[in-house]
Image (cartoon, rainbow, N blue to C red):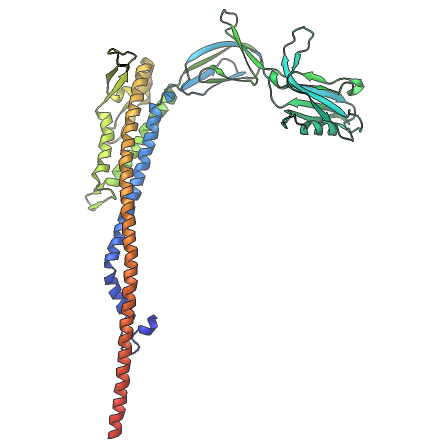
Length: 478
């Protein structure tokens, strides 16, 4: 269409003229697009600030959480007993002495066979009875087995070899369709000789089994030999009036010491495990908060700064609400800490516990202070460790109160920023709707100009044809 309206008769560059006029017509839309770009840049800056504030909130929540202050460090006097601090609200410092009187194991039964490949060397069926093992009560050297539940009959398909036996056991299920929890396999010990081994998949006395039907099928007519399943057992406070025992189907004990998990590997006497408050872990939480706060302060300063030399601002330079967030956070350090403490009393009998205001004072007691220029936090882990060692309860209480206050502040600030972001996004949507409307108006205007200039070219063409005809007529009269 462009070639049809360009100045074929008039010699004018009508396309260029239309484009120039459209630029003038689109000036309003261009301003709207500039506003959108500015708003989108601001939204990106707001989101960046909010991300930093969220990191502060997360770190403050950790500092204000009781579980953080219950962090433990566990040590064991034995290399055969591993003590792992799991922390959590239940964690408590303490010491425990015990003997490892047994370690957990899964049941293992073996049948010695002369030829692992021989056919018809196995019975047509065997029976597997689940049950529980208990220590040898009649001193005959054999642990006692108590049947639990229904026995399962396993059919050995032909050719009845060791491989057929192990395959049948591994695929057998109980009346409910559940696995028997036993793995059978053949081990070649020499030439074609070997053993068929049946091993429980879980350790612990309650995960035992008994196999009948293989009696006399071993080398020389021998029966299967069984090593019974067994629980791990600890004797706590051995040799004292407070002695007691605790068992576990595995070698792990998770409920013996609050916040500590014990794993035993060998029978041993005289083991001591100590759990102490882990001041280093708590210090790391405070350092993480200080780092997050400093990153947030830096981000806010970057997004709101104004360069006096270049006279250029940042995306949020004119936003007072964002600028004052720095001061609000820094004031929490400079003003010191005071907080409300709930007491275990009810003096006025109103059903509510009494409260009191604690004037803790300078946060230097927690190792937290302002940098020399007053624009950042700083943390002295040594000062914190010293204060915590002197008064762990008081420092914990103050630290949790500070974390809770800072979390509340950042949560409020994030809400403010989120509200601004929502407003700006609504503004951007409105502007984009207006830009889309301008597209329709501009397309209509361009079409009108193209028709107008096309009509002009047509008119000029007609006039030129008439002029040529008149010239011809005048020439013929002469």
